[in-house]
Amino acid sequence: MEERLKELGDPSGKQTSEFWNEWFHVVCGEDHRSFEWYCGVDEVVRVLQGSVPSSSDNNKLEDNCDPRMIHPGSGNSLVPVRLRDDFGFRHRHTVVDISNVALEEMKTIHDQKSSSKEESSTVEYLLGNVLEPPLPLEDSSFDVWIDKGLVDALFKDASEPCCTQSRALFSEAYRLLRNDNGILVVITMAEKHSIQLVLDSYWIELGSKSASLDIWELEPVSGQMRPFAFVLNRKTTEEKDSMFRWHKSDGEVVEEVDIPEQTLVALLEQVSSRCNDSRARFRQGMKQQIQDRSLATLEIKPWGADTNMEKLKELIVSTKWAAASSDGQERSINPHWHLHESKIVPIGYGVSKLVLQCIVNTDDLDHLVEAICEWDGAAVIEDGVQSVDVDWNQTNMIAA
Image (cartoon, rainbow, N blue to C red):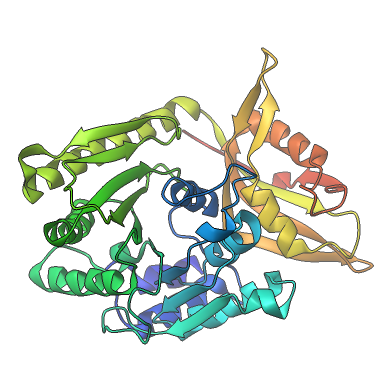
């Protein structure tokens, strides 16, 4: 797979169905692996819960505040079904992609994770090109537009052709979003040209009506590059925003930042500088935390043949693992899972084992194994797992 992806090259700026069909064919493989750009579903939820009304009960949305969402450039992400199943976003989700391979993969995965036909029908699949609007969808029919890596994938720079296409893309987004509090979420690695394209859209929208801007630091799925979420909220008030809000990754600090000189150029420089500083702090923190690491291969065995192994894998990689520190407090273990290397291997009598690879601090490897062994299954996998073994032949030290 790695060799074929190298042959396909950097996906940034690729806009054809032929490229993305081949890309998803390689990434998904015969076992229908899902692929998440940049961050996990929990980070998407954190942004949504800070942007749309919710109740405090288990982080579920109130029934009358359950937004209808569109996911353009969705690939075969698990975001729609996990928002539906795990976080209470129950209304219809519409996923749009130029790749019929990605949509078929997504349907396969979603059907596997839906317990009923009714649940499966809450996700609508649309083959379409967002760069050739309009999509066959009604005006003002969505509450939230979730772009998870789409701008980065479509546009490699901020040249005039890219700016023209980007404006058409965002114009279509605003056509589909409600005029009152329609929310546009763009999750991006925040290279300067991507920031420029997003802020250009915000500035145009701000010129015609009131809009607010929030920028969220996100935790990446893996690696040392921090992604960001830009959230543009159309507001009914006539008052123009003179500041944007910066949300730290700890979820507790929200800083209001003045927009200098009320110009797009000044805003672009300020936001780019903040994103660069945030990335530098994140990389420095990673260096301080990670001394020696291991690329570890774990073999996880369930109690019986009736265990849903795909659900087990999903829960293992989405759970926040922790170990007791010397002072008796819990300390986070942060494995970075390599899902493209995951396997479900039959071992006999209808039982299979789950093989997962992750990068983890070497000192935390034993603690991770112990934590998974003691895990209760999150009320989904009865009694958790039977055992967790490290395949030492497939586990290697990595220098910091």
